[in-house]
Image (cartoon, rainbow, N blue to C red; front, side, top):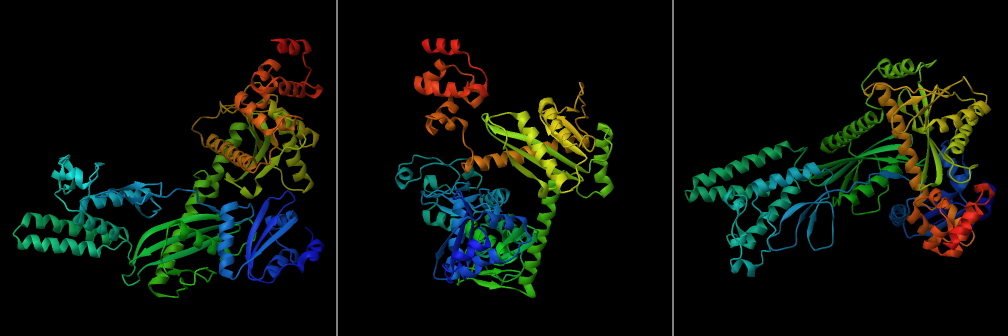
Length: 617
C-alpha cells in the first residue's frame, strides 16, 4: 500500500484507542499493534522513513488494514497480546521461549502426594509453580521429603480401606520419612498441616515452618524425649542454613517482580526475578526478536505481561528500569533510584548481561574468550588444509530442502571470522525450476545470490560450501561461470554422509582429521544451514504456502493428493508407478489423470504399451 493509497482511507480510521491488523494481498495477517489513537499510529507507518529493512518490508506488503475500537489503552494492550499469541504474525515480537515448565503438584486424593509434573491438567489437584528449573524443583522435593514427612506410595488411602486394615507400613515409615497414614497412625489434619508447611517453603517463607519445628522440639524436651528433640533441632538447623543460602535482599521487601532488559538491534534479552517474602525464589531470562522497529518500552511491556502470565505471578508490584504501559491498574510500577529495590534491579541486569554473553558464546562454536588471532587460527587451518588462496574469513554455505520429494526451497548461511552473521542469512523460494531438481535448484539460487552481490558491489566470500554431491557442485559452478566469477572465490562440495570435501573436477576427495578445529567449524556451518533451511521449510508448510504438484493436476483434489503421498511417500515415487498400481489406491479414472500428467513430454516419454498392459492387469 502506497502513501497515496493510504491517504484515501486515512479519514475513515477512528482516533479512539484500539488495535489494528495489517494483511498482505493474500489475506495473511502480517502484524498486530495497539494504539492510543488508531489514526495517528497507523498514519505514522506511511508518513515517515524507517531505517529498518523489516519495517520497510512490512509497509510494502500491507494491502488491507483492519481495526477494532476498545474502551481504553489497557483493553488494547490485552487484546493485542491475545491476538499475537493466537496468530503469531511474522512481523510481531517473537518470544523465543517454547519450553514447558515443571510444577509441583499436590494431588487431589486422600493424604495427597507431592511430585514433579510438566502437565497441568484440570483434575482438581493443586499445582504450585511453574518453576523455571527442573533441577531446582527436584532439589526442593528432596528437601521437603527430608524434613516434612509425607507419603510417596500410590495406595488408595480412603478411610474405608484404612479401617479395614488393607495396608501395612513400609520401610519409609521405619526410616522416619512417613508417619504411616496407611495404618491410621497419622490423622488427616496432621497430614494437612505438613502440606501447609510445603506451601510456605515453596513461597520462600521458611519462618512458619521453623516455628512449627521449634514448638515440636520444646514439647518433646518437656516430655523428656531428648533424642527426638535433638532430631527436630537438626531439622531446624538445616532449614535455617537453607534459608541463609537463598538470595535475600531484605525481609521487608515482601512479594514483587523485577525485570530488566538489554536490547541490541532487533534482539532483546529480558531477565525476570520473582521475589517472595524478600527472597528470590525464581529467576529466568528470555530472548525476544523484534521484527520491526519496536521501542524498548514496547518490547519490555510485551515480555513482562507474557512472563508474569506464564509463571503465574500474583505480585502487586513490578520493579523496572523505566516506565511502561501496563494493563492492570492494581499493579504498582516502581522505578527505584536507590535502596534494596535498586540492588535487585542491578542484580537482574547482571543476570541479563550474563545470559547474553553465554548465548553468544554458544553460538560462535566455542571460540569465546579467545583473541582475534586465536579465532583466526581455525580459519588459517582451513586455508592450509584446503590450499585456499586466501584466509576464508567470509564463508557461505548453500543447502536445498524438500518434503517427500516436493516443495523445494533453499537456504544460505554466512559466517564471518568463524561466527554466524545472521543478518546475511538468506532463504530462497525456487522460481525457475518445475518439480524436484536439486541440480537446477542449486544453480538458480547460487546465480541469484552472487548476481545480487555483484550488482550491489558487495564483497564476495572467500569460500562457498555446497552441501551435496558433485552434481550440485557442478550446477553451482555453471552459475559462477555464467556470472564471470571463476577465480574470484573458491567453491567446494561437502558430501552429506562421509564429511568429505571435494573441488570441481577433482576425482579424489579431501578428508580433514575428524577432531580438527577446521572440520568442527565446517560441521557447524553445515548444521546451521540445515537448521535454517528446515525451519524455513516448516514455516512455509505450516502456513500452507506450498502448492502440492499433485493438486495442480486437473481432477485431483487435496484429499487424493494426500492419500497418494501417504502411501507412496514422495511425488518422485508416484511418478514411477504404473496405472495399475495407482488404480488400486485411487481408482482407474484418477490413476489415468496422474499417470498422464507425469508422462507428458516435459516429464519424459511414456511407454504406451506398458501403460495399456498395466490397465489390463
